[in-house]
Length: 169
Image (cartoon, rainbow, N blue to C red):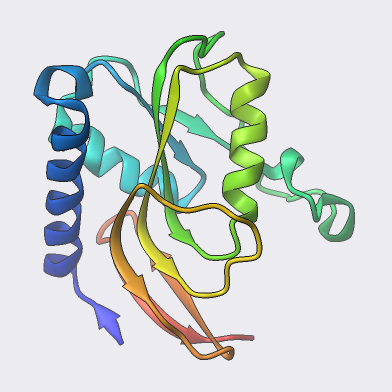
Protein backbone atom coordinates (compact mmCIF):
# COMPACT_ATOMS: atom_id res chain seq x y z
CA UNK A 1 0.00 0.00 0.00
CA UNK A 2 1.28 3.44 -0.89
CA UNK A 3 -0.49 6.70 -0.09
CA UNK A 4 0.21 9.22 -2.84
CA UNK A 5 0.85 12.96 -2.41
CA UNK A 6 -2.76 13.98 -3.04
CA UNK A 7 -3.98 11.56 -0.38
CA UNK A 8 -1.58 13.01 2.19
CA UNK A 9 -2.75 16.52 1.32
CA UNK A 10 -6.34 15.39 1.87
CA UNK A 11 -5.42 13.76 5.19
CA UNK A 12 -3.64 16.93 6.33
CA UNK A 13 -6.62 19.07 5.34
CA UNK A 14 -8.96 16.85 7.34
CA UNK A 15 -6.59 16.92 10.33
CA UNK A 16 -6.39 20.74 10.18
CA UNK A 17 -10.21 20.90 10.12
CA UNK A 18 -10.35 18.62 13.17
CA UNK A 19 -7.90 20.89 15.02
CA UNK A 20 -10.01 23.96 14.16
CA UNK A 21 -13.09 22.17 15.48
CA UNK A 22 -11.32 21.02 18.64
CA UNK A 23 -9.87 24.45 19.56
CA UNK A 24 -11.97 26.92 17.58
CA UNK A 25 -10.65 29.02 14.70
CA UNK A 26 -9.14 31.76 16.87
CA UNK A 27 -7.79 29.55 19.67
CA UNK A 28 -6.00 27.13 17.32
CA UNK A 29 -3.90 30.06 16.04
CA UNK A 30 -2.62 30.63 19.59
CA UNK A 31 -1.51 27.03 20.22
CA UNK A 32 2.12 26.00 20.34
CA UNK A 33 2.68 23.43 17.58
CA UNK A 34 5.60 21.07 18.24
CA UNK A 35 6.87 18.59 15.65
CA UNK A 36 8.94 15.54 16.61
CA UNK A 37 12.06 15.08 14.44
CA UNK A 38 12.05 14.19 11.63
CA UNK A 39 8.75 13.12 10.09
CA UNK A 40 6.67 14.83 12.75
CA UNK A 41 8.32 18.14 11.85
CA UNK A 42 7.42 17.63 8.18
CA UNK A 43 3.77 16.97 9.08
CA UNK A 44 3.75 19.86 11.59
CA UNK A 45 5.10 22.29 8.97
CA UNK A 46 2.18 21.51 6.69
CA UNK A 47 -0.43 21.78 9.44
CA UNK A 48 1.20 24.95 10.79
CA UNK A 49 0.83 26.65 7.39
CA UNK A 50 -2.79 25.57 6.99
CA UNK A 51 -3.76 26.79 10.47
CA UNK A 52 -1.89 30.14 10.40
CA UNK A 53 -0.54 29.58 13.90
CA UNK A 54 0.93 32.74 15.46
CA UNK A 55 3.74 31.26 17.57
CA UNK A 56 6.87 29.95 15.83
CA UNK A 57 6.82 26.24 15.02
CA UNK A 58 8.69 24.33 17.73
CA UNK A 59 10.73 21.17 17.18
CA UNK A 60 11.80 18.30 19.43
CA UNK A 61 14.64 15.86 18.98
CA UNK A 62 13.91 13.20 21.58
CA UNK A 63 17.12 11.20 21.07
CA UNK A 64 18.34 11.71 24.64
CA UNK A 65 14.90 10.91 26.09
CA UNK A 66 14.44 7.53 24.44
CA UNK A 67 14.19 4.53 26.75
CA UNK A 68 16.43 2.55 24.38
CA UNK A 69 19.18 5.21 24.31
CA UNK A 70 21.65 2.98 26.17
CA UNK A 71 21.07 0.18 23.65
CA UNK A 72 21.24 2.20 20.43
CA UNK A 73 23.88 4.69 21.56
CA UNK A 74 24.33 8.21 20.33
CA UNK A 75 22.35 9.07 17.23
CA UNK A 76 24.89 10.63 14.86
CA UNK A 77 22.25 13.06 13.55
CA UNK A 78 20.95 14.51 16.82
CA UNK A 79 19.41 17.91 16.19
CA UNK A 80 18.77 20.54 18.85
CA UNK A 81 15.22 20.96 20.10
CA UNK A 82 13.74 24.38 19.45
CA UNK A 83 11.16 25.31 22.07
CA UNK A 84 10.25 28.44 23.99
CA UNK A 85 12.13 28.71 27.28
CA UNK A 86 8.93 27.63 29.02
CA UNK A 87 5.77 25.84 27.99
CA UNK A 88 3.91 26.74 31.19
CA UNK A 89 0.16 27.05 30.57
CA UNK A 90 0.56 26.60 26.80
CA UNK A 91 -1.91 24.56 24.76
CA UNK A 92 0.45 22.32 22.82
CA UNK A 93 -0.28 20.44 19.61
CA UNK A 94 2.32 17.65 19.54
CA UNK A 95 2.78 16.23 16.04
CA UNK A 96 4.35 12.91 15.05
CA UNK A 97 4.35 11.09 11.74
CA UNK A 98 3.51 7.52 12.82
CA UNK A 99 2.25 6.35 16.20
CA UNK A 100 3.26 2.74 16.73
CA UNK A 101 4.50 1.59 20.14
CA UNK A 102 4.01 4.93 21.92
CA UNK A 103 7.63 5.17 23.05
CA UNK A 104 8.50 8.18 20.88
CA UNK A 105 5.52 10.12 22.23
CA UNK A 106 6.43 9.17 25.81
CA UNK A 107 9.94 10.52 25.26
CA UNK A 108 8.54 13.71 23.70
CA UNK A 109 6.24 14.27 26.67
CA UNK A 110 9.16 13.81 29.07
CA UNK A 111 11.16 16.44 27.20
CA UNK A 112 8.21 18.85 27.00
CA UNK A 113 7.66 18.64 30.76
CA UNK A 114 11.33 19.51 31.33
CA UNK A 115 10.42 22.90 29.82
CA UNK A 116 7.42 23.45 32.12
CA UNK A 117 3.82 22.44 32.72
CA UNK A 118 1.58 22.91 29.67
CA UNK A 119 -2.15 23.56 30.08
CA UNK A 120 -2.85 20.72 27.63
CA UNK A 121 -1.19 18.49 25.06
CA UNK A 122 -3.12 17.34 22.00
CA UNK A 123 -1.44 14.48 20.13
CA UNK A 124 -1.75 14.53 16.34
CA UNK A 125 -0.34 11.79 14.08
CA UNK A 126 -0.46 11.35 10.34
CA UNK A 127 -0.75 7.58 10.74
CA UNK A 128 -1.51 5.26 13.61
CA UNK A 129 -0.67 1.60 13.36
CA UNK A 130 -1.25 -1.48 15.45
CA UNK A 131 1.29 -2.67 18.04
CA UNK A 132 0.97 -0.23 20.94
CA UNK A 133 3.23 -1.03 23.91
CA UNK A 134 2.31 1.99 26.05
CA UNK A 135 -1.16 3.38 26.83
CA UNK A 136 -0.80 6.37 24.50
CA UNK A 137 -3.52 7.35 22.07
CA UNK A 138 -3.61 10.12 19.50
CA UNK A 139 -6.37 12.73 19.66
CA UNK A 140 -6.33 13.33 15.91
CA UNK A 141 -5.25 10.68 13.40
CA UNK A 142 -5.05 11.01 9.64
CA UNK A 143 -4.97 7.29 8.83
CA UNK A 144 -5.34 4.07 10.85
CA UNK A 145 -3.30 1.17 9.48
CA UNK A 146 -3.22 -2.49 10.49
CA UNK A 147 -0.04 -4.22 9.37
CA UNK A 148 1.53 -7.65 9.54
CA UNK A 149 4.45 -8.07 11.94
CA UNK A 150 6.95 -7.96 9.04
CA UNK A 151 5.68 -4.59 7.76
CA UNK A 152 6.47 -1.00 8.78
CA UNK A 153 5.11 2.41 7.83
CA UNK A 154 7.66 4.90 6.53
CA UNK A 155 7.19 8.58 5.81
CA UNK A 156 9.61 10.10 3.32
CA UNK A 157 9.87 13.76 2.51
CA UNK A 158 9.72 16.57 3.00
CA UNK A 159 8.93 17.16 -0.67
CA UNK A 160 6.92 15.32 -1.60
CA UNK A 161 5.58 13.73 1.57
CA UNK A 162 4.98 10.07 0.88
CA UNK A 163 3.71 7.32 3.16
CA UNK A 164 4.72 3.76 2.32
CA UNK A 165 4.31 0.34 3.85
CA UNK A 166 7.64 -1.48 3.62
CA UNK A 167 9.05 -4.84 4.65
CA UNK A 168 10.84 -4.81 8.00
CA UNK A 169 14.65 -5.17 7.78
